[in-house]
Every structure is written in structure tokens, then in C-alpha cells.
Image (tube, rainbow, N blue to C red; front, side, top):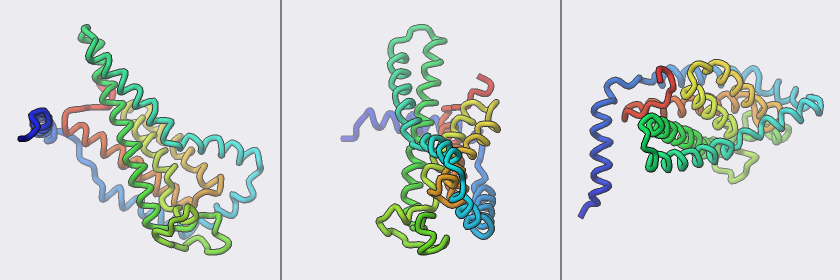
Length: 239
């Protein structure tokens, strides 16, 4: 016997998709992929080696700043607060009687779930991709060069492309840009600056950071569209 609760949930989601999907925006993923591929190839051919060698000459104070900034690429900085916010929002939804406050709690429940899923799932996929590509990191550059690949090597030394931290930075930046569209440009620029710290600390090549950041942005944007297809709008524009 089928679970009536599960069937009811699926029926509700199906009905919402039929209602909202036709008006949801579309993502031109082919254009996004083509632009990213061009930038990655350009970086590989013209900038990867140059920046990797330059990073070795950066002064200690600059590397210390980069090391501090790059630490924010740990997904826990988003996952833990968003999970807590989701739990608090659900608690308020069940107990709040004032419609205006309940509506705000419902919005933040959706927004926190969106941020959590965007960062978590893009990070998981990014980690799978870097193991499949198996590109050697800058720390093995002297031995193997910048274009050595060992897929499924089982070593972090060959998990450079794409940069996992940059995926997180991209998902975070685009996620916040969707939530606060008025500040989307500075958010995306600042996010890329944080992604570049992976190059400055010698952990990744420029092409790794570009690929990771673009993938993270794309995944978060795609997730926002997915939510919109079911009538769950996370952007605060017009709210």
C-alpha cells in the first residue's frame, strides 16, 4: 500500500510545477558552458603556468591574507547557518499566528533550503568531477607539469580541476546574488576574488578556479530556477 503522505506530497509538487513551470525563466546552459570552456582553455594555455610560478614569489603577508580568505571556501560557513535558519523558520511557521510574520518565516525557510542545497549539492558534484579529471595540483608541477592527469588516482595531489573551494565560492556568491539582486554585481565580483585565493596560495591553477567558480554559479542559478518552477521564489526582488 502506497504511503498516502508521500503520494500527497508528490501530487502537490506536480500540481505546483504544472502551475508555475511555464512562467519560470529558462537557463541558457549551452551559452554558459561555451563561455566557461573558452575562459578555461585561455587560462590553461596562457596563464596557468605563469600565475603558478608567480604565486611562489608572493610576499608572506600577501599569502597570509590569501590563506585567511580562502578558509571561507569551507562549505560549513553556509551549511550550518542555513540549516539552523531552516529549523528556526519551520518552528516559527508552526507557532506563528500573525500572517505577516508567518509569511516571512515561510520565505526564509525556502531561502535557507535553497542556499543549503545549492552549496551542498554543487560541492558534492565538484568533488566527484575533480576525482574523475585527476589533474595534478601546482604542488606537483615541478614533477609532472601543469597538464598531467591521473583520473581516480585516490590522492588529493591529483584533484585540482575544478577547484572545490571555488565551486563553493561560486555557489555562495550566486546564491546571495539571487537572494539580494540589488547587490548581485559586487557579490559576484567579491566571490571571484575569494576564488582567486586558491591560485594565490598555490592550491590550484587559474583554470581550476575559473571552472569551479563558474560551475558553482551555474548550479546555484539553476537551483533558483528549479525552485521557481514549483512556485518557490527565493529572490527578494519585488517582495
